Image (cartoon, rainbow, N blue to C red):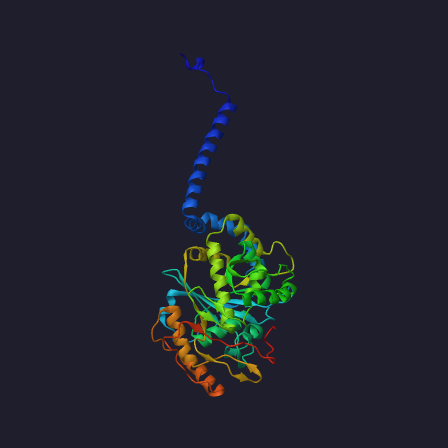
Length: 420
């Protein structure tokens, strides 16, 4: 048979066959990716977050929104100070400051106190993460933008000089090397929790009472709504606003999963760390729809006049952190100072470390596994001043005190920093 006699395939049929082949290939590839995603979701996301083509696309489509809605472009890392003589062991860790502010209405600026202060320490080798809450009423040294020095409640640092001042307060008093921070207000916390479908907590009758009490004010602050709780017990579901109110409780005991009992403001910070742990676990198992919902909350697509979260971290730094966020294990959660007294100074109830140097040594042992850490000269100076000024001496932590942590009420009628 001659070639001219062969049956010719019309061009349109060739096109159809080609398209069918492409569809089959796409189907096979998508099936493989789907199976990969289901088998190793975190590995899938980690791979694509590091892929240069994906990152280039995200930088082109999302970076501008991130810089406008989330990143603090005015944050000046050149203003961040670190004490001399810090241990080289700290180079293994990435330390980030987390601040929660009680912003009322729609403002999101430096005119608020950071009533939640958490040091998040990431081990770059093991991906272990440890959290330490700094009690908001802890008396520490603060240097504001004008160079004025004050010894007062540490939650005033954000008010006195914004995030740079708050970060410097942590570095100066605790021998840390923090350069970055994240800050969230009530609206941001509530919306992020809602985007993840809420959380479940073990709730005592006393905690139920206070959640409902705090909901009254929290509704006014956020403009959001949630019903009062009608039940207590194990695995009580909390919406975002209810969980935010739960984080504010400080008048009744908190019973941690490990059996530790935390009272008063130590209970509040322990609740906050517990909520963060639950959010992390939910986020690690979140689906695409939930992650998009969280992104919309963070990028503020739904509102035009309110910012709910801010950070010094650049867009690409956040992408770099994704593998850690997905793979890390939360291996520790503590409050600082470990030992303290609660004298009234100038009409306000203060938390004073029973030896700041000693407590900083214990903090470095907890965060960085560093035994017998020797605090810097700067910390020793602050420690000596606090002991002389307040009369609170160094008292070491009993090694057998593991079942209960009694705190302070954190309340004084003359305390201008307390919201209640």
